[in-house]
Length: 285
Image 1 (tube, helix red, strand yellow):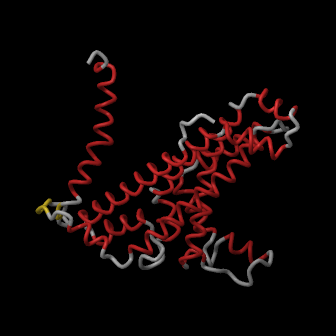
Image 2: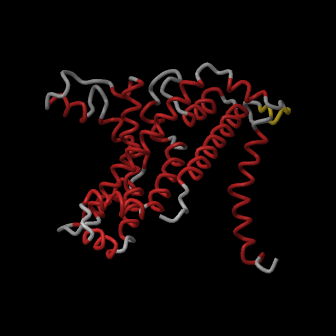
Image 3: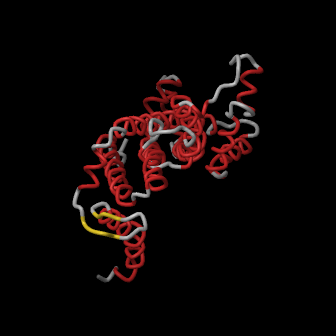
C-alpha cells in the first residue's frame, strides 16, 4: 500500500487504455447491437457461432498466417544482415543509418499508397519500369489479383518493418563485448562459427523483442492490407483485421465485429504465450 501513490497513476492508465476497452469489447461480443449502435439484448455466444460458421473464415485465417509468418520471417532475416552490416565501420555509415529510418518515419498509409499507385496497371511507374527492362511483356494489375496483391502487401510490410527491427538488432550487436569476439578469433573460430556460436546467442534478447513486437504489429496491421487488397471483391484476400473492417464498414454489424476482435485478441495472446514458452526470451544465453 505504501507504493500505491507511486504506481496508482500507472495502474489507472493501464485500466483506462487496456483493461476497460478489452473488457467492454468482450461484453459487446455477447450482445446484439443494432446498426445504429443501440445495445439491444444479450445473445450469449451466438455471435461467435455466426463467425465460426462463416465459409470464408478458413481462407481468412490462412491468409492471416501467411501474412504474419512471411512478413516477420523476411523482416528479421533482412534486418539481421542489415544490422550486422551497419555495425561495421565504413565511410558514410552515419548517413546510411539515417536513411534506414526513413520508412519508419514516413506515414505507413503514404508509403503504401505510393506502392499501390506505382503498381497500377495503366499508369504505375513500377509496372512501366518492369516492362521497359523486359521483365514483363505488358503491364499487369498486381493489386487486382489475390496472390499478387498479397505478395505486394508483404513487400510493403517488410519495407516498413525493417527500420525498427534493424535498430533493435543493431543495439544488440553493439552490446556484445568485443573481448568475446576476440577470444573466439584467438580460439580459431571463423566468421561463420563466431556468428552462430558467439554472436547469435548473445542476440537472444534483441531477437526476442523484435520478433515479438513484429508479430503483434503485423498481425494487427490494417492500413497496408486495406490499401493493397481493398479493390479486390469478396473475402479471398482478407486477413482477420481487414475482415473486421469490412464487417464494420459494409455490414455495420458492431456485435459481430466485437466477437471477431475477441477472436483476434485471443489468437494474438496464444501466439505470444507459445512464443514466450518456446523461445524463453529472458533465459540467459
